[in-house]
Amino acid sequence: MIPNNIPPVTGKELEYIAQVVSGGALGEGGPFSKRCQHWLEERLHGSKVFLTPSCTAALELAALSLDLDPGDEVIVPSYTFMSTANAFLLRGASLVYVDINPGTMNIDPVKVREAITLKTRAIVPVHYAGVPCDMDAIFEAIGSRKDIYIVEDAAQGLFSFDRNGKALGSIGNLGCLSFGGAKNLTSGGAGGAIIVNDKKLIDRVETIRDKGTNRPQFLRGEVGHYTWQRAGVSHVLTEIQSAYLWAQLECADEIQSHRLRIWELYRQALVPLVGERLELPPICLQGQHNAHIFFVKLKNKEESVQFTSAMQDKGISVSAHYSPLHRSVPGSHGRHVLHPQDYTSTESERLIRLPLFYAMTKAQADYVIEQVKHYFA
Ligand SMILES: *Cc1c(COP(=O)(O)O)cnc(C)c1O
Image 1 (cartoon, helix red, strand yellow):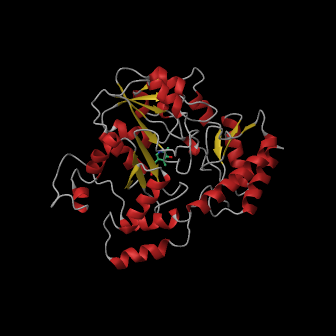
Image 2 (cartoon, rainbow, N blue to C red):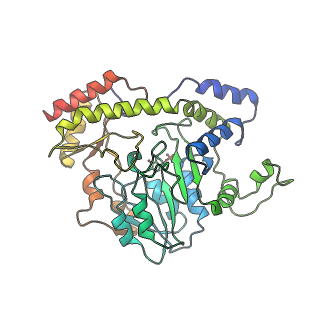
Image 3 (cartoon, rainbow, N blue to C red):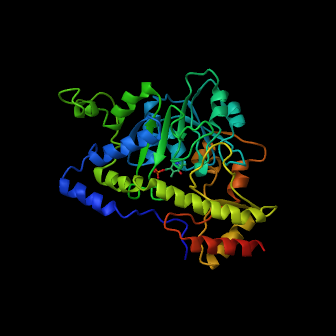
């Protein structure tokens, strides 16, 4: 069986974890977490980065940092992971679920503009499959409104760049990354980071993340002892997880080039089949993508169910992705801003992800291609 994903392993993970164990300093803020943080800050062009236990936690930290009031509105795409919405729902915000652009599967800026009201406090663009949202159009939609924050859900976006060359996650006021087991890199099954691009938010995020204390200042020797400053959480990554992540960041370029190679193999082999029964992901004209996902779109739901079981029979694990949030129970209470066609529903039913992972061999990719071609023959 060719699985849909295998989390990457680079070979250095155990060695680095052993160093942490024998060194005895398990708490956060150790040498591996500092290395990861600085590496990410460099790749993200100098934005401030804090490691978190997950992207879900990073999104929660973002929502906490915005000091939302009940009734404040937060705009999210309906086509996303529930964590995008949960973070803001937990803070009492009113969620507004916006339709996607069927070409990119990303939030449609035209609908964002329509969804904005005087109560809008945040917009959360999700860069699906590591394909950049049209951030310029989203900034245009908010115009001169200084009271609207942009929080990028860049869980899938590390190593992608927008058309201006900016790293995903480094464009909005805040950005959130994931190092969960299904992402391109992992810190051992769970992990994430919050990227703070808005200088006004750095101190707030740092304090809230560390139990609402000024412990970070204490660790830098800026204060003699640390105290409780405001309500906060403990959204830190352990040194063991950071050691795991460092083993992966060191090999990031290798992991990325392998993923991109398989993505291109798929694309080149399947392009001739594009037609009424098959669509492929967009070539990233708007920037550079990171080969996080290679999906195919079948004609309709029935075809995607059929395709999934046909691949299963050939020993290939393919999988659908998000169900529309606006059609879920919690999502039904929010406001919905959709195209008459409801692209979130129609497109999510047709989308199937092919296997794509670091340990995947060319022979495996060729076998998948052969079976997909056979299905459409
Ligand atoms: C994976 C993912 C998350 C959640 O990330 P975790 O690190 O697992 O909490 C959030 N949003 C999107 C778009 C994701 O793909």
